[in-house]
Image (cartoon, rainbow, N blue to C red):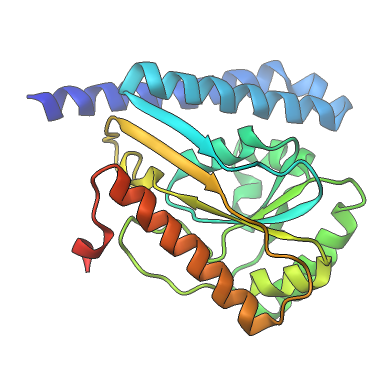
Length: 246
């Protein structure tokens, strides 16, 4: 009975947040077309209100730990669900995301992603995609911001394993900026698929930056070790054992 009630709460919550996305998208549209600041304010408003609704409608409390960067950096984050996107974006001044190209054609999301300066990537053409991504990022970073990339390239369920892709290292080398790893446990409560969301404490944690100039192999090793070890620690903190999944 409790699970059925939580599923119903989750369904109502999902309907509300997507209707709210469309409503805000329409209300802010003139402002977003005139200035990129309008798009940023719309997305910040959506992130803040959805985080608030998650707490009161479905019982997902949230916490951001560490020090969110305010300067121009590369953020390499654990990606478990839509909720970690909201928490990271809400925590930094001007987040821009590396995103799959198909999202550009998504109503509301696509338009605002363009105005925010997000970088679309064609994941089907790996070599060409990485080369174009570096050029696009260099052009976009004429306006400073925090560029967010997901090193595993997709959402990964808690306890699952997916390799870290070299595109993060190539961006790190090309930008010459520090890279801030981010760990998360949010997938324990807000899964990457399905309707049911579970109550609990969803955490993202900004970790110590990796300074510019680290060799590629060493960088990838440090990045994966930092993100995976801390993410596993955060999941265990809330009672989920990632090792039990294997």
